[in-house]
Image (tube, rainbow, N blue to C red):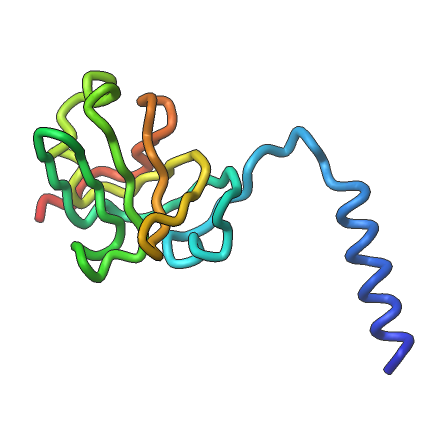
Length: 125
């Protein structure tokens, strides 16, 4: 039993010490985002809802608000970098950025279009 624990510790340390620093952020699903607050990650999911307001844009992932497990937020200063946001509804996307906790909900603030990659076309719903 102790030997298995020791082996697990050595493997974990070796993985940490020899990890590729140039590998970039890890890819996770929207449901896993709360586990990674404060970290730069690539989050995958489907845009379930696009809400465009004068002062903010929300892209709710996997389910519409309030059941959405993860949101993308775009403030007015950056909205001109994104074209036809409404067309993203139903699309599979990957988004890269720092996951923040806003009112106990994970989100990434999008500041440039390069943070968002469409990986699958909208299903037409």
